[in-house]
Amino acid sequence: MATDLPEPPWRRTTSRPVKRQLSTELIVSTALDVMAKDGLDAVSMRRVAQQLDTGAASLYAHVRNKSELHELMYDQIMSTIEVPEIDPARWQEQLKELARTLTKVMLDNPGVARIAMHTLIPTSPQMLMGMDRILGLLAAGGLPAKVASYVADAVALYTTAIAYEASLWSDAEGGVEEAQRRMGQIDDYLSALPPDQLVHLRAMAPVMAADDAAERFEFALDLLIGGLDRYAQKPATD
Amino acid sequence: MATDLPEPPWRRTTSRPVKRQLSTELIVSTALDVMAKDGLDAVSMRRVAQQLDTGAASLYAHVRNKSELHELMYDQIMSTIEVPEIDPARWQEQLKELARTLTKVMLDNPGVARIAMHTLIPTSPQMLMGMDRILGLLAAGGLPAKVASYVADAVALYTTAIAYEASLWSDAEGGVEEAQRRMGQIDDYLSALPPDQLVHLRAMAPVMAADDAAERFEFALDLLIGGLDRYAQKPATD
DNA sequence: ACCTGAACACCGTTCAAGT
DNA sequence: ACCTGAACACCGTTCAAGT
Image (cartoon, rainbow over all chains, first blue to last red; front, side, top):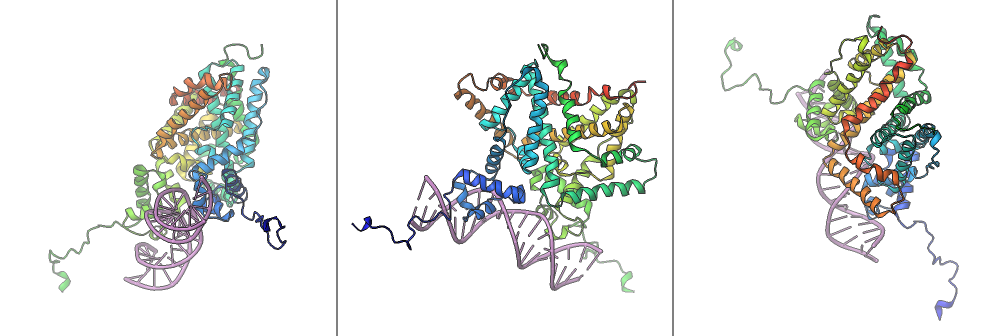
């Protein structure tokens, strides 16, 4: 039979995969590439499709809409986080470490914080597991259920908000210059004003200009977590 | 002279202002109307212009771009806030009251929180005066400059984030249903899982479903502000 | 100086038609 | 089932032309 003969070498029957099969995973990873290169705003259906040599409409077979795509990106990034085993004696420090890790991941992936902020209630298994661990830590600290749920919420929200704020600086290209322009505007305004106006702001200006983001974050973390002992129903380190 | 004669009544020389003169103020207030009716996403240059019986290009004579328009809306809303005179003896309670007022204003004007979150550093006189009052309160509490700047930042950020989150529920029309859909999804997932998995989340589900937003906010406010005495360099109530 | 219509370079999503 | 091009109904912003 003719088909037993080897294909002549000039006929590439195994059509080289110049275009990989579309799939949700491929779309999500391509979207993450676009975000890493040009920021979240550049992650449009059209742009992602273009990167995959197809039209935007083709993506809708694998992804419900743009906000689902964004959420899948969020899940993907967050699922890389390793949550450590719970050590009840160190629950407060562990909770802080988790908050630091979360922030770092979001800062390393500018744009994710913005998705997180828009995602009302995360439903992916990965996020639920993370939430379970946090609640486990708070239970280990002897916190009653209601307090635990409030603390978990406050830490998650503050952490996300910090990362969101920072991502504004880095995400849009003109972020840093814009921030400097605004600080300059405030300085100019203060200089033009009689010196008995806005005295506290005036006194604070040098302190705020010398902002240490990491220290600021640690301070807030300490406010949110450092004082939780008083809510504990049993000693934290028994 | 002919011009001394009264205009004949059928000639309306005082052309009735069917179209008011364009101005920054008019544009901003129209934009606020649109936001109140259809949410921040509906506040586009084209939509605002349409409301004013003109084209989008006409707005650019009074407003630099869309993000400046958004920021002007933010300033307008925030300038309605009255900051009380400082009572040093009640500085913690006053700071909490300010945070509550800020949140209320943002919740009453869904969309403003989203602008606030995007506005890196507010530069309007109104916002600077507000910031000055907050710093004054913290100084009255005897907090050192650095601590004061960190606290002011943390309270402002948490407050904005809380309002932002809440605005997601109300802003987009499908917010509430979407939240319920997600809670249902989590319930389903927990039911389908062996009962020894995600035990903490499972235990917490009823507590979180009975969320009291106001109580949650007060709890966080207490974490952020209630423990500040230990940072004071002089007694707070002397 | 202020306003305008038209144009440019984008969006998300749908749909009928193809394979 | 999956993919596609074209279309629909939008965007922000610029620019030459008008008054």
